[in-house]
Image (cartoon, rainbow, N blue to C red):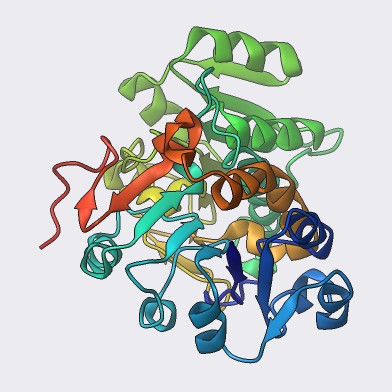
Length: 357
């Protein structure tokens, strides 16, 4: 099969879907691999590294899309990509369609088959292609939130771990999946007092066992509202697979928070879990509502492309091999579960009934 890997077009996105070593594996399996010129540069991979393993470098995005049957990228296609996608393309990437009716409608009009990384689900319920980026986003959320609490960045000027004779910072994390757990672990390691809100009893137990400065609570609305009033950093990591994220923090709750506090919404890819969230980019990452700084960048792992590209590539490669080599790949349940759109129709159960107007 002809596999195409385009350059990412999202603002300040540096990841590449397939690193040279993965491309070499695909070439050895008899596939033609095309990579757009410069696609791997921000991740530390030169065009020559790709050429050395048998990859064909496409000089432009048009040539790349014209050459490929299976298009493998990281982030969802945007305007420039959409013009180049065809009905006969098999698209494999993060799609995050639930909060994006405009993109959904565009893909339906093209009529292609789109498999979303975030929807691929194994028999045990795990989301293997979402997990690595969730881990990275979770760690980045705490790192960036810590920085935004610094007074020169507009924060209240508090060190998360505190010192003898000072108060520790207070961090609240919503969700104890891969992203939330990693946010909480890093905040706890920095010495903050951490509260994790989660509904699943098994995850509540896991959080309590990580460190003595982590408290795990059920998200009763009254409890959430009370704890937010004294929070320094709040991280949203709520996930309903392939569906739009619910709002767990209301505008009224945000207004009750202390000026200079920080909200980081990892769930923004799926619409955001704070009522005051709206998508931002690394070019203009923050905004302020009622004195509270919001960071809602939709491609957080794109800030560390050398790490992120290697991590996502290792996760997706077995599935890319299956898509490229097995004509009956739809019988493979994890990939079948990942189909979001096909032949102009919404396929995934979480997307059916979605309003497109």
